[in-house]
Length: 329
Image (cartoon, rainbow, N blue to C red):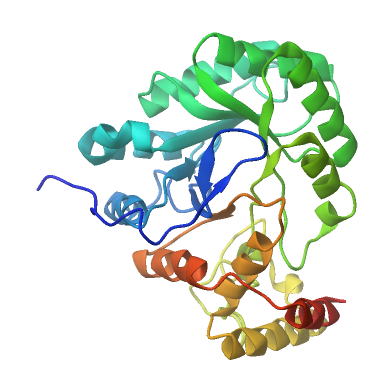
């Protein structure tokens, strides 16, 4: 049965301008980091992707190494594009990244021009696309001059293989230098993708200030701290949870008693707001003027729908923000 997108898909989603650019991104973007690789259920992935677009989520975020195995998330998106979403290509923002290990030998990771441009070519083949909307340097490379990595991003735009470029996991000093290099090349840095959530606020000290000063958008990944900022672990560790499995990013020791006191207090306040804890955590990030969009994952359509509904209640009073800060101290 042919797919036709919902005619109301743009009515409820909020769109924010990304830095000083002309590009609008949905407040909620969908990341394909987990649950979209070859090891997962393709039918479920397809349902999530199509429902996301029906909800006005126009931005799908990938990287060369997303899977598992690496590269398979890009292939799965290609299959959905070819069967259903391809006719809406001009309504979509598709991003990918290069920086982590993808193939053997000295040219298979980090930030050399050789690796970056070869990786982008591979990603485009896996995606079945002529171009991506955003191409990122996924991490800074201590062994490669920053100018070389930024020149590779600039070349990707010149070649028509990317419309915009961004960086991820760069600290404030690296970010300032990277943005200046790209500006001088004539390819502005559109966006920065850092880890940022209520429990991990390192970006607030200096990075957000740099982004605001330079006119660069911000799209936090892990906005729910890998599930800690949800009601998932309020009463222990479910057997089918990420912590109970073999995740290298979330482990049982992360659920220390002091942290769970904070999470439960946050959950109580979310209930008073008429939101889930996850919705409040996403709204809290979107309350930051530097944040353009938040990058959520999804393992089910119902989870996606619940988190997309965050946009229905984004406002906080000053007293609320102070109360939340007091919990998080």
